[in-house]
Length: 252
Image 1 (cartoon, helix red, strand yellow):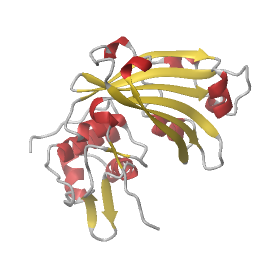
Image 2 (cartoon, helix red, strand yellow):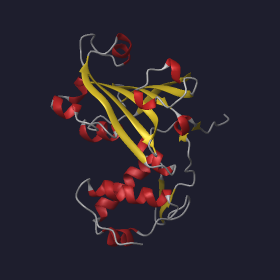
Image 3 (cartoon, helix red, strand yellow):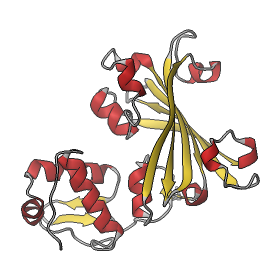
Image 4 (cartoon, helix red, strand yellow):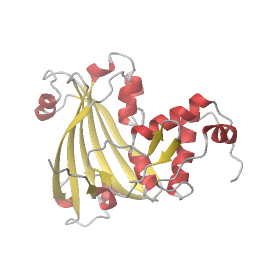
């Protein structure tokens, strides 16, 4: 393999994560195959063991690898193009693993008083404010995911300035942001999944190439901490390859 030179931006952990994801996507580490020994990767990347294990932790959290005590670390045998229905995912990683080049754009961000429906879902006071962020992801330049997030300002506990909150990509990846920056790990989601067509959805102009009768999935999520505190509301619009889901149903 070619010699790799890592920089300090973004973090070393995220750089290592991206390299490992690229290798999985390219078939260097196929599904079910054992990853190289930790010492080998540490020497190749010139990083600490803590940095590598931090990258592994992110991959394990997304069910991309399996770590077997005393044996080693293996690529998950069940990687596929579809989004597992019960898995909260990072879209950049999922798009990469499908073999596409991911792209991200923050369409808008502002502080608002949400509509009553969202106020009720988030157990907010009627006059309290939330951060509203619109964002989209592309696969090889084609827009396939459009999301509107609402996060109550109360969850930030004055940790960030308004300028920080409105900064493009500041809250991404969302689950990592809530866990690491807000100390509010999301324990579970309640979700409502509805089929729709483009003509009945208010999509940004980046999606104008889709026909009005093109199908999509609309997923409405509310994320909760283990204590039952609602910390975000999300309305996701999934088009093209992003709208296909797979799940496993067990017979009881």
